[in-house]
Image (cartoon, rainbow, N blue to C red; front, side, top):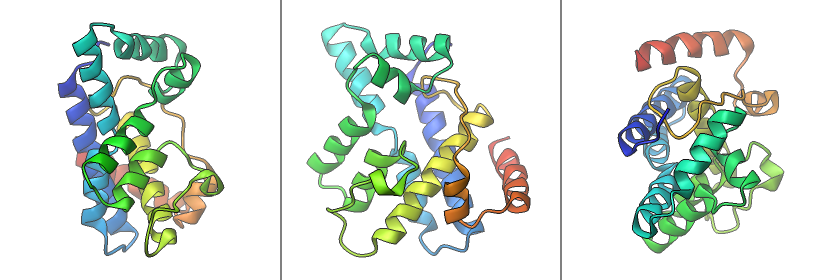
Length: 187
């Protein structure tokens, strides 16, 4: 499948809607923040794609094709190919634009399920809440890939670890309920 910005936009809208739905399901008052963070989580991919257009290199598309051929996530393909990482580039953009430290953190860490590896030193206020928000974005991103809504450069659907689901207090039965809700939301 060929990457295009329309597919990424659809993916991002799906992650936004799904993030809001998960936050509401979990009873979190910050469900609109979850929507915004879901919408912006892959902004670094837009930057990488546009930079490749400017210098006519095609590295972004090559990473996307590599990810699909090897059944990897786009993030894993970036690491293997030693390409600029979209999470870090997106973080730098958010920082440059003066976005909130919360959004910066979500954009930077939306591929890191291990809380101990996330650096939230720039966040003022509840770091626990930001960790939960990142967890919501990770699971929303997974759902959107699982249901093949939009296209963000890969089709890999590695399920979030049980430790993440446990932090969010999502039991197996709640996961089944969420699966049905998200499937209907994205239909």
